[in-house]
Length: 537
Ligand code: AMP
Image (tube, helix red, strand yellow):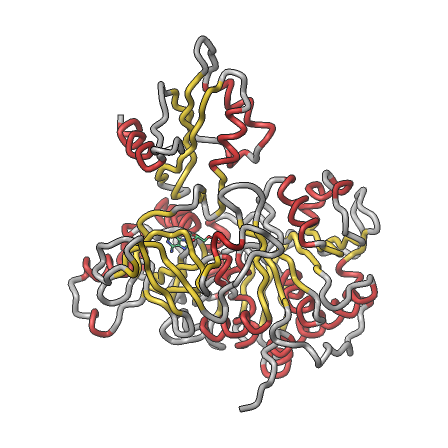
């Protein structure tokens, strides 16, 4: 067989050639804008040539701090197609973490939505490798800013070369993108995606038994383009010629419902918090929405509650598709679709199966292991989920924590699961000491360290507790030093300047003692049990 290279330039070139009139619908701060793939293809080539003008070369890292909009989509293709590396920065990270990841990735150019200029202005003196900034907004005029040199994205595109040709010697194993994921302890860890990995992952998204993404779909990614590449959907959708609806900045459930109705969205994707918000919008009944175009809501990132799936499907006739993955896995690993032999199960049993995380997609392999070896496929025995395959990372970028997760050819996910007779995994716990709130991670250890730096605190342990809107929220358990005193408010005020608001614990509970393991580590399973009783009261 021919060994032609699976590279991202071929995706956007295909869209431009075969689907010149299909649309990208982009919501920006000035309203809805529409671009065809012909226009998007040309703007992408212009952008690549303009980035070359400001000094971007093969292998350089170019970062984005951007919403889900057409400019971000253009960057998704221009940067990797010219041989550079697209580094999508999670705008919800703390300033210290943003400084770290920009320096660690050695980003040369930053593409920044106007909304996030203040974030970068505040840390600009700590950035060691950045040589140029580009502001993403609808105008050609530059806003007031202390960043230099600062270029206008729209001006760069306008002045770029429409006949620019992507290099034809890209190797599929070269890096195309990178993304950082939160670590249990310390700084975020980088994951690098190759052209080949992204291409094969995109193929997987198009399979009928996974998301079945196709040219005839109208796809709206609500999951941020800075979180695991919006689950790879913008790549696959562009390649397939799928119409894309990009919901842009500061969207609300109402905005999403209106976009679904007006653009006739067929498939959308996001974390459970998004769908719980949309459900609330439907339930409050002030407006009626026509959602009959939807054939699938792809839900992942945290467990999809069974009750939510039931309400969407039975009350609103909106089919749900529960999936599982990680930043390290591009991210698609499993999808929970009933097999044909399960179609005759009673409705409630079918729902229970579909609320599991699903079975592995073609192309990947998984296994579940505990101290005794591979667990039995009986839906009861628990073990850690291990994954391998061509779109699974095999290391963290320049990071000595690689050994913790990548061993003997398998990614050790830290997710504790059962696997049933049909191969459906169900996540029951995680070894990662992180709380996932509304789809984004909070490090319990950072909160603990900050609390323990307070003069009145002897010990502090933070755990995640279930939450109806955010899935999980952090709660802190604190033991005060003998004779010392501090109120809950005082401790929260102490934390406030150090963390983003959404990181702050929902509650601080004072205790006499924190349960510990035999080696003196906090026994968080026991603590969570204790809190369950506390929260019931
Ligand atoms: P991230 O790298 O931020 O996308 O987070 C990946 C982690 O999110 C996984 O290791 C799981 O702990 C969790 N996760 C992802 N999808 C699901 C799901 N469908 N149900 C439960 N947890 C999930």
